[in-house]
Image 1 (spheres, protein in one colour):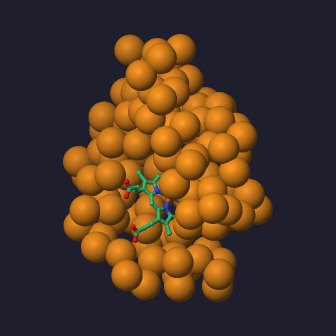
Image 2 (image 1 turned 30 degrees about the vertical axis):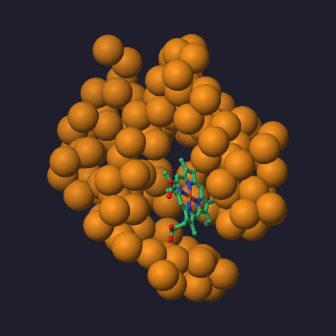
Length: 128
Ligand code: HEM
């Protein structure tokens, strides 16, 4: 099992999604309004599922790619209109949440997480 998967397993049921959205919504004034109508109970479950997909895709599993392409389409200018400049803020918020919650977090682990996220984000942005 990869280091990122082990890190995810330490925090996924320990408030990762809650902490992530707290940080994300504060991170940039453009972001909170995007979530005005969001059911966060559902959103947190969907986020955890999406992180599984990001990790699987980064590991080369084809199912992950289909899910990420669908997510890219949903976030695209034609639908939610999440602009590409918001993605680095999203990734930074995830790193902050992990750093706060994973007792074994380190800069090296953070870089591995960034690599996993970046592979999926590249696919999502192709769908933009
Ligand atoms: C790797 C990057 C991202 C992943 C994995 C991700 C994941 C998700 C997932 C799983 C959903 C739910 C989709 C559904 O309803 O089926 C979602 C919705 C959403 N995401 Fe993202 N997202 C990413 C990037 C972003 C960014 C950069 C923003 C903007 C800051 C953003 C804002 C939103 C919004 C506004 C929704 C809709 C919430 C609602 O339904 O009310 N996402 N995202």
